[in-house]
View (cartoon, rainbow, N blue to C red):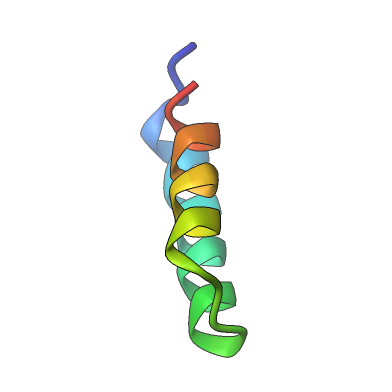
Length: 38
């Protein structure tokens, strides 16, 4: 499953923004990364 960059980048931005606002554990961050890389 590949997400095209136009769709991927805004989502990635949201994750980064969310991480900056609400610190999350490394484990959860890995899970989010895994979700994007499915």
